[in-house]
Image: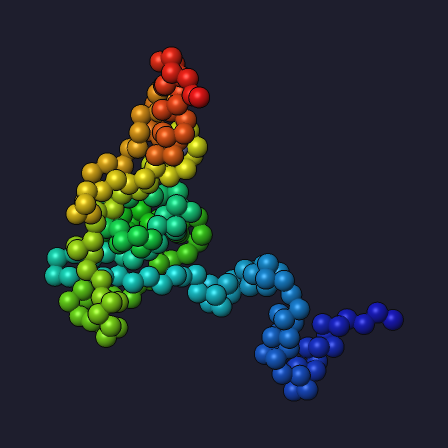
Length: 206
Ligand SMILES: [Zn+2]
């Protein structure tokens, strides 16, 4: 005799011998993440159970607003080079301006990860976190520049700044004669490009 385990379980749930929510929780504990996702998707419950959203801080003043994201995220999403200089950067943190760059980010997150961005509004003038170090005023940061890619090693090209911290050059060094287009990083310039030029000019290393 074959026993339908589902029928047995359903009977027990109906009789009140098994707590249905507890049963589901116990089943889920033995399923892989992907199986749980598949099950929820089949029952059109995925969006209810796992809110498809990520929370980001949105800083605003009387005239404009900026969404706080990380530079790494922009690289992962492949949109770093599409971000305009109207956004600001503070090391790993990037403050995307609201008119164009926030839209670029929201679209990429939605298309690539199926996530909706929800925001926590923070007025630049307020100090909601009550800690001066946590106060962010994007206007006081440097303009956003994505690191260009070195044509010789695929690494990041250094962003060059004046002593006052203003960005004045992002394109790196001339890689000729090793490449005729693009720019190269400082390391490649020093250890590959310059020695090659000297060699071609007739200088030989000792
Ligand atoms: Zn390089």
